[in-house]
Length: 165
Image (cartoon, rainbow, N blue to C red; front, top):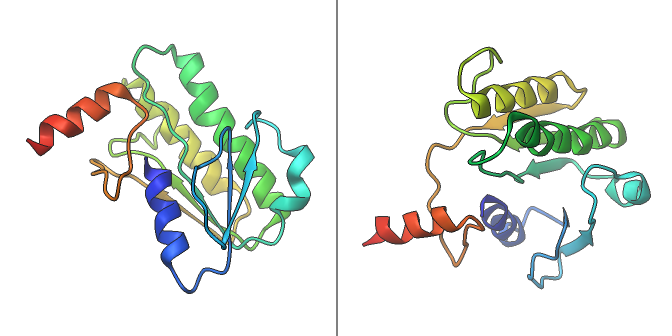
């Protein structure tokens, strides 16, 4: 849902020349500035590295709820996967600014009792150590879906519907 909003704003911004999305499925958006790469395996980028060069910014918006996941499952999707992308992009585009969508309550000490917050903190710290021109951690507390954006998480969709009433 965050990625949908970021994509919309990037496509509307006249100062942005082009947008590349990389995801497991197509975004379902048509726009002259948009180029999409459907990449079923988001842990490995060697086959598309040539297409990832020459960019000056990345908004990494992929995220999942930790509900019902073991720490290892959540770490795989919230640490290992973002780091695979960030390490590749920092090597290919060292002048890039990298923006990671994290979450309010993230634990930068990596030592707290809340599993998801520790994992997010570990991810943020690892990204900040990479040789990007700049890296920013965006920690939203609440996200309001606008302009037709929808969460893929059923519980969140129900919550948003109830909050609107």
